Amino acid sequence: MQNSFFTTLTESVGNRLVNREDDVRTVKKYFKNIGYLDEDDETIERGIITLPLTESIKRFQRERGLKEDGLIYPKGETHIALNIKEKEKKTNHDMQEDLTNTNFDQLIEHLKQREGGIADRSKREDPGGLTNKGISQNLLERIRKTEPSLPRKTTDLDDMQIDKIYKDEFFLKPKINKLEEIQKNGKSNSAIVEHIFDAGVTSGTKDSVVWLQMSLDKNLGTDLREENSEGVKTYDGINGSKTRQAFERALKEGKLKEVHKDFYKNRIEHFKSLPNYEFNKKGWLKRAREILEKDNIILEEGDF
Image (tube, rainbow, N blue to C red; front, side, top):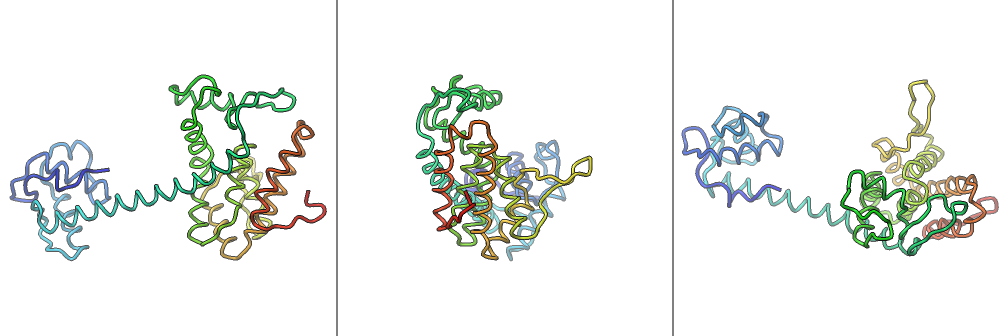
């Protein structure tokens, strides 16, 4: 985040004014950052007044009903307006960050109740091997390729590190936060997003999104499949704009319950296809049903 202009602008900036190089660079970087100025870094670093900068200042002034002279005076009306815009930008960023954190905190709290502590079961029962609150050794080794500061053993992870892994790998990367935003904006409290997040943890985020895409297509009549190089259509498991638009449509049409129920069925079908299903079915079914039942969805005979 840029510093406040009140602490960085020491002299006037504009054609025929004082124009200290540091001040000009500060103003140019700010206008480039908000999309008003298109200059390369070398030109910006020279710290001189240019026509594009003057036009950027005038545009800012014009859009805010200020005197359109292309000049900025310390603590003048344009300077004050720039500082207000910066504060608004910071406030919006902080509000979005707070919303993301609040949503994630709720999800991770529920997840931890299901994951327990350290588990080291046989490969036959759990091919993932040693886990600490659901974080497997295999996953940790993959993440350490880009974050080598993490402990080598999953059993040495602390709670903050575990939460960060869940947030980065299973909430932000698969854009679960975007689905949460859609729900919040639509004033929905459906547990389907929690189910998508939970399924991503147990089965991988790609499979979880595929089950969502399949469920949306079934209930909306859409086709979220993508055509590969061989001309074959398949679900890509990417929570992109098309998938999120379909999710929003399902919410607006009051079909999230149906989508959630079909998502559950897809998840259970996957569980049943695994060679270690018999060892884990009691816990897996209980886990999925508990989330489903938050939406007061009644399972019928044949719904697993």
